[in-house]
Image (tube, rainbow, N blue to C red):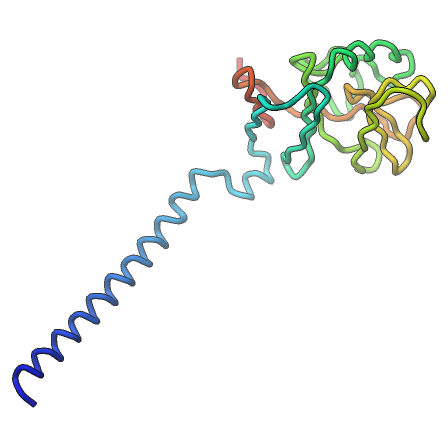
Length: 202
């Protein structure tokens, strides 16, 4: 074998070794970087444990409801219309707890009002019936409908056992659900950004 052939073989071996080393180094760097970068986002475990979530409500239209997940629960965020807000006082004599005094699902002080919210038009509620954990459906159109009273003003119906709630999540009397829908801790980071899962510190 000539000296030139030996040099070429050595060069090829070095090149192969360098390429392999660089490739392995790149894989190692990526393996280190991925967990590091992922620490900037809440983990699934943190979310399940109750990490707060930010929600942009700038595009939420009147009468529209959006569902987000917090602690594995569906949280309803709804922009109520002026008509829906006006309807809240029309059936208060039919509600089991119109002022949210019951303690099974304590209502935050800032939501102990007729509309059960910080901003009157924005409802923030956990969409789980307080009876057996079903998720009520939207029955937002006023008027007589199956399984609803003739003077229905709009709200939510849990089809499992017939519990009804108004558009503030307040349960009607003589229904299986023992309490109003839960209002989760929340506050506004800005006019259009809601933080669900934390209360504003004093």
